[in-house]
Length: 106
Picture 1 (cartoon, one colour):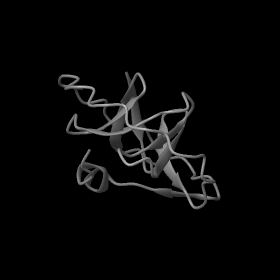
Picture 2 (tube, helix red, strand yellow; picture 1 turned 180 degrees about the vertical axis):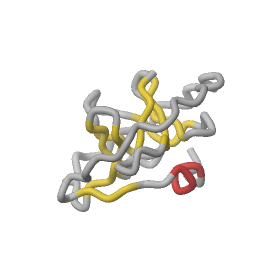
Picture 3 (cartoon, rainbow, N blue to C red; picture 1 turned 90 degrees about the vertical axis):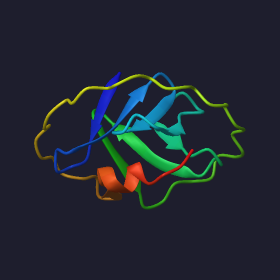
Picture 4 (cartoon, rainbow, N blue to C red; picture 1 turned 90 degrees about the horizontal axis):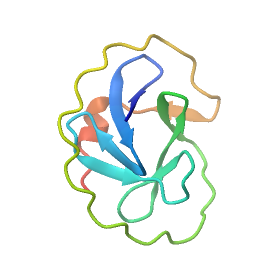
């Protein structure tokens, strides 16, 4: 499991295998290309992982239809990783808040 934070250091999500979960442990996305770019259940770009940060690029090239992976199930309680500290965003990135990701439905 990899805990993911925004640039403010707030915990917003976690990655487990090829799936992305919000801080409430609900699946919100997956990594169909087995890289660091996540999409939602309809295949729309959701965001990018950079080390332990998750952000949304202002432009992401369409990579084709990715299909639907099915529902991965409940991963269990993820715990609380604490605060990661501040970092700068990439120039083409924007932050998510935990609330924004908690409102995404699979």
